[in-house]
Length: 458
Ligand code: ADP
Ligand code: MG
Image (cartoon, rainbow, N blue to C red; front, side, top):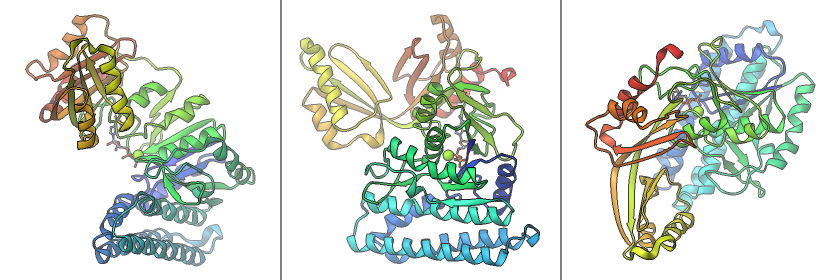
């Protein structure tokens, strides 16, 4: 059994829906996870934010979402002929009823937000999950029209989580138990279709798994069902050496380890949710990243061991970074000082990308969104605080540098005149991070990629 996940780009319009169904048709008893249709989640969140101040405009956005789905369904179903013995009219009506139903719920939620006058994280999640609720059920109906034995499963009945809205933590044992329903459907010859990204807490409130959460839903199910593989289908042929939108020469990586893929996501590659690899790694289930527009391309396989690589496996970058440097007034405070700083990180749930220390000072590279006055106040109790914003981080993943000469010749020589803010490297972790001014990030990424990655590996 394989779990197949199709992202927002694959759910774009009736043409991609048909393409996706053609792919699903080639599998023996797959489990299907889908994202919301392209742009929908972003629009839902924008409507939720707007509802607190302008219900009228928020409800206009809700109607836009409704109409876009109606059009998609009509375009898909109108072109289906009845040769599969399915009643297209009846399926169209079922789709329309579901769109009505979800729109009604959406408007009720937007109204609730308007009445409260502010957007709580609970209501934000309730709204954000509607995109997948819509797409998954509609896609399942369209699958029936296409002649597949699809059967919609509401993720709320499977993906149980805690109440950490916006980034909920899955309850693995409940998910394993609930997934039996999917095995059962599959054993009866059905193809279960479930929306990714959303779930439900123990009080029955809708939750979401965070940005790119559908990838995580797929690996949670893959692990719960002991799948043979988890396949993430998208619009590029695998995980590339660097973001192909920025680096023209980037190329797909054939094989990489769970650890390397997690690091890529953590250090900014917007291709997979960073938690995706955990459930898969636990059960050693390979994750494949494949392209719906080039289904015969082998894509990337992520598994226990890494594959062949040159001097580095991949490169990622992060924008919007601020360096916070704390300097202790007493040089002998040593580890008390450092543990004080780490306690502030813990208290404010800060995740740090790069750290460098001396006995009496520490520099932390943080996403600028994490910086706020209370946190700086707490740091100021420990010493003098300086901040430096508008920085970026370049991270090289899976490095194999053996000498200083290699690091300088392959990396620093590519960007000889660029000012450098911070550097960290560990041969143990095979990871090199360079912090530099944000305005030089893109050109530096391109220059390093050119020097370091050899297209002949392709
Ligand atoms: P989906 O809608 O299928 O989840 P995403 O937009 O989340 O798709 O992810 C695919 C996109 O990620 C690609 O179109 C690509 O532009 C971008 N991307 C960024 N970094 C990488 C990378 N290192 N390798 C592949 N794709 C990347
Ligand atoms: Mg994605």
